[in-house]
Image (tube, rainbow, N blue to C red; front, side):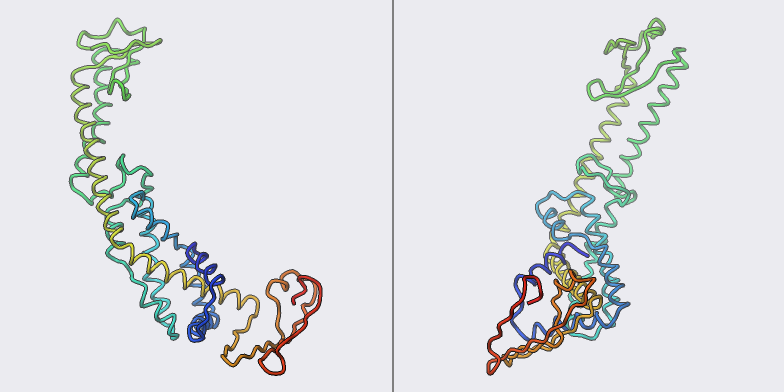
Amino acid sequence: KTAPGKRMLRQWIERPLLNLAMITRRQSAVGELFDNYILREDLTDLLSGVLDMDRLVTKVIYGSANARDLRSICSTLSLIPSVRELLSACEGDELKALRESLDPLADVRDAIDAAITDENPPFSVREGGMIRAGYNEEVDKLREIVSGGKGWIQKIADREKEATGIKTLKVGYNRVFGYYIEVSKSFVDMVPDRYIRKQTLTNGERYITEELKELESTVLGASDKLSALEYDIFCGVRNLTADAAARIRTVTACLARLDVYCSLASVAAKNNYVCPSLNDKNMFDIRDGRHPVVEKFVKDAYFVPNDTHLDMKNNRVMIITGPNMAGK
């Protein structure tokens, strides 16, 4: 269910264990989940919400993570207490050890959750809108100035319409001229002397006033300060997360292992697989063996199980014949 779990499963297949005790320990974890359907399903549901923390932490370390990445880390960390609670009833050494290794990382989770808004944070980290309302008093004050400035713009537009009688008058903004008053051609004769013409358009004229320039300075100055302050706060939270990178990666590895165990247990239950009893006696004994891949390709036919017995005495060699993909 998780990207780290998929990568770990591939690693386990490509680099199988050779230590009998370690193999048995893994088997016991899979067996415990195999025997407890409810626990396995509950864990699987939780793991479905685990994001690719390895990739996210790498972005944090290299300073390329944005607010959404931090929220993604926070959402995954918020699942850990529930995972630990489910594992608390487990008795096997491996699952108990996994539970103990699952650091809740409450300090990182709480820092992100307190500072970073969860209401669709922006991709850019330079334009503000990342910090949660109420987290920083200065941020809240600057936001009030910026949002209030938009209201002041509308008030100026309404007042100028009434003062000049120009019904089509409107106040706009662009990066070249800042805030401006736009009047259509048919009302140019009604423009007062205090308007300073800045631009001629096909259908009208654009003007500025001293009041508009002062408001622009206030609002844009507050907007720039707000963006810079939010970025500084965000960098502080990102740096705190980067400092916890090793802890996060440890937790990610634990969740990946748990994901693999749940997956192996689910596949075993679904396909009626039997846990092998391993030994170091140089003996290989399978009763009613089934090829796990070939079996999937003969759904409409009965798969004939086969016995296999090999040892270092009288059964050292077997000659197996038959067509390809027959299960040899």
